[in-house]
Length: 112
Image (cartoon, helix red, strand yellow):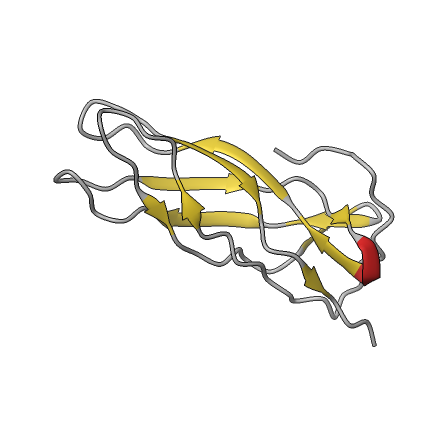
């Protein structure tokens, strides 16, 4: 999922920030799931970075799903903040998958 879009984020080796990515999956088979979580630490990529997202959804309708993906590169926001976009699907459980898409919560990384 790593892609190159408006990135001038200055990554350094002391950067170990994470992002919240809690939201709701698509509604399939008559229900939705919450996918709570925190990304992994920043993974340098050129002059930017991305994050791995690994987790599981809430238990709903007798089952849950798992997911593993990477975010987009940093999307710069005003005030020194940035976030990341994610667009992926869950595992196939109970006869279906759910789509997960959206932005992580924005953070401002303090560089030493």
